[in-house]
Image 1: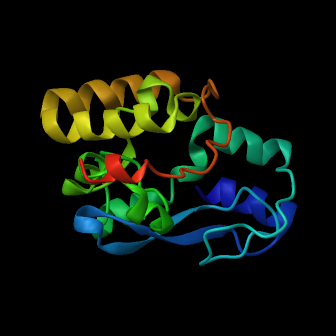
Image 2: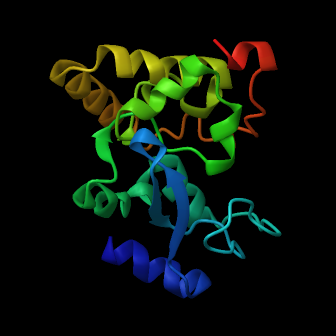
Length: 176
């Protein structure tokens, strides 16, 4: 992590870390910490202003998942766990259906069922259904399986494209 921080500093200067408020278990808000991989991204906001294309090193960090290493601090603090639904943006909270809101019954994770089943390459309904499936079926065996598959996926860069905005569900679906 120190080596990554040094390279990021010499490429883009400070800040090295990106911080953003995210909802966790029971939708309680916490500050997520990651390595900053986009230049000119203000901290504490949900919409980066003036995204500048990432450097090759930053692309590597994102593709490999190494940009997520500072989230180990979030795990130590108890805001997150190693496995669980990835913490999404606060502005998505009112857009979830009742079924999708169940993703907040557990701590968010560094990796999860959606990440080992396509990451951002699958559509939002599939991702959120996988999050809820994890909530309903979580066991130590499931967690170990997800962790193993995450290790196998590191460095491949599969599903790392920007997922696009989650716009929510039709109003009638939000009540289900």
